[in-house]
Image (cartoon, rainbow, N blue to C red):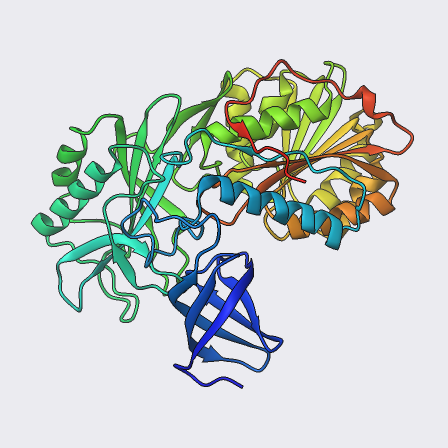
Length: 477
């Protein structure tokens, strides 16, 4: 139907999970980059497949109602912020609709109300983690840092990201200066040669502590003291380390981290609970909305101090320990061994003796522990799975535990809706659905859901003394 480089005109109807606009020409699906729902565009066909085509918007003929000029100077080529062409209010509306559509269309919950999304007062400067690929320009040894262009590993040079904290560009300038002085070569993905692959930086929002990590194709860098001397002049920097990744892969981090100077880890707080975060730890990148997310989860859990809570997919224990001060006992389960080690250390650090952590697949760990001790049977189960959602075997395990309440924290509305249907068919009522904008500028949205056993009453839910520090989108009918 189409040929490469053909120009077409179409109206964008929806958007994919990776930020491409979706339109149709004579019933044929076309995915269009740099286009948002409501745009009418002239686009050039890049690739044609059997059931769809891929195109790039070359001219916006009629802009969507919420379309704006991005504030970021590299918004077009950079693959990071897919919704930077929309006003923030329009972004919130789109994410609200996305959650509502999935809950109703995939989950089949026609009557379940979706609460207005909780957005941010300032949707910029929120990220506490940045990772910048390092490369050369047209084979030159002169290093560049930036972000990958969409669907490629071509680096868009930039030292400034509007989603990161003020001052992060000083770290990048220090790294560039070091690479030039030391002669350390950027890594080349095509040849597998070169040394420095990525710059990873993390910041504790509550403490201001910053760690810097170079991901390297080796186990050492020349004259690291040159870089450390520059980094020490930057506010908040507490340490420099290396992460070893010698594999020919596009996976960013390797398994081994080597300390060089100062501390490998930083400290941050969620409420009054402190966490030690390493370069490889999973930790939510938006501390403001993370607190909103966890406060909502705490409210939905309805804890009075007498409950046993299971946190499945517990990671380094962020939700577990946040809930532990309000529960009788919290049991976290996670399949990643290093995360469990961090969770145990964080529990000890906060003197939370009612929190315990177990390594393994939840569907295997849970039945074993309950068989050994009936008192660990949960009143509340919390799940915070990856984007693919919960394993079906885990959902079956949760249903067999028969908790009074389930709190589901999701980063993908489609897999959330799928899992909610399984839980609802197993005897639970979907009581509340709260979207939270954890990633302004991107297509992603977090959602917190409360499910109650159908024999239970929703009025057992209690609310914590909490006022969100963001803005709710007005409900639009």
